[in-house]
Image 1: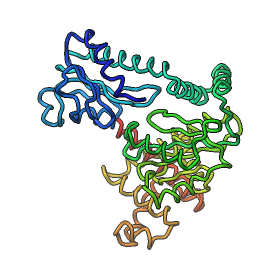
Image 2 (image 1 turned 90 degrees about the horizontal axis):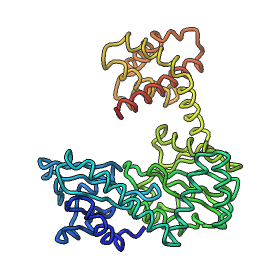
Image 3 (image 1 turned 60 degrees about the vertical axis):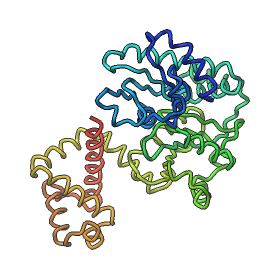
Image 4 (image 1 turned 30 degrees about the vertical axis):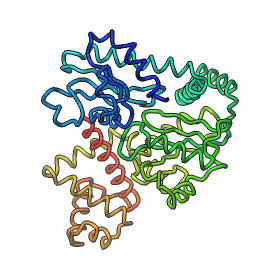
Length: 380
């Protein structure tokens, strides 16, 4: 979406709806490209950059203005078209007083650019491709029928078997110019063939459906290493092989789950180690009630702050293949201390009747359960 050519028209069209308040339209770099206060055009707006980075509304009070370079008090909303952030729209005023106007402006601006996109043949094709992707990721009989009709109109024939590849920004940022650079890079490598592949933005992730026989993700990362290292900003997670359109939604959910399981730059569910991590993650979800009972017993048995330390020790111990020497070295503790911590954990869990494999399996499930609890607490 070319924001700037339409920005002034949008500002002029909407200015009468917001009681004469100043309206700004910023690009994904935080630069004001249009404003009802012409003197501000071309200046930087840090609040807009924060809205692009987080994908959320940024409210700035009069007291907070010094903390945001180039900003005034007001509300700044990410401007999304087809699920992708193309800029930020802002309105000046005291945030509590202008919330209703801010939401009205946000809806109007999004609809304005949506209609402009549909009026442009090139952007209309992008909208159609986005509709195909959304239908495939939420499959029903009706959605699949619509997807096939749209693919026929686009001349798109997905190459099965295919892979669902999810590129996510390592910093957790919303779509920005960097993603545009990523698309250009993938296109230059022959990964974005309009007649064979489908791509779009979903939940601020770049999702790519491509024929698995035609491309190698590992080779892509290797090839990029000697160039501009564009992929350094992104993690790539890949789900199971899809044989039909009906497999795509599940593969996307798998790829999205891998983001929370592994911190590796490339996580491919076809890789045995990644598959094991995913199976542990899935089992921990399915047996969450049982694991929570074990976890509660551990929480009652140890002092506050002691349980995370013991779990960290166990994680390191099993990650190093039960090597006391390697785990103790990484944690900077004595080998006897490591063995004592692991033994205390196992004693409370009462795993004496379990063999080594069962023991490790249950502890690894508890570790997955602990990680999920920590993630949920961080979001609260």
